View 1 (cartoon, rainbow, N blue to C red):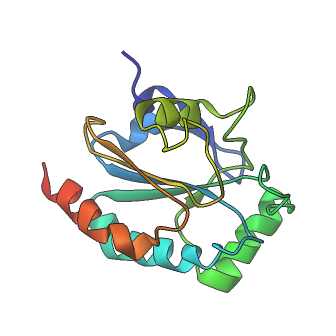
View 2 (cartoon, rainbow, N blue to C red):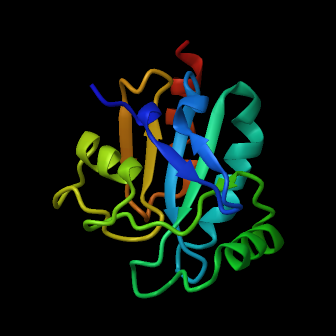
Length: 161
């Protein structure tokens, strides 16, 4: 049976990274965009990253330009924007599709594992997926749910060894 650890992602610097490297960690995976009304959520994601990374949280942002062209920049421009405006230190991948035939396998897996209210598709930027250490629990949060609102769920997953 497939788990999230079976996939690889490409960082915004072009490095191939095995998701298996994060085995035993709690993952917070988010499709992001720099020109969206939810873009300020980068600050909340970074705050969670700083607060819980040492306890085993890994935040990964997947910049995506599939929603009204709200992520128009290059991978380098996106990284610079996130660092300068929100101090982002968590990993960003290269720009990625989350829906359709070209959707990244990580998102195909997550959508199947934790479908949404109106089907499995990602509806907008900043949809969040929280994956437990053993991949046994995957929670999905709507774009309107602020990162700080899921802190309790993150702590619960981190406390489960």
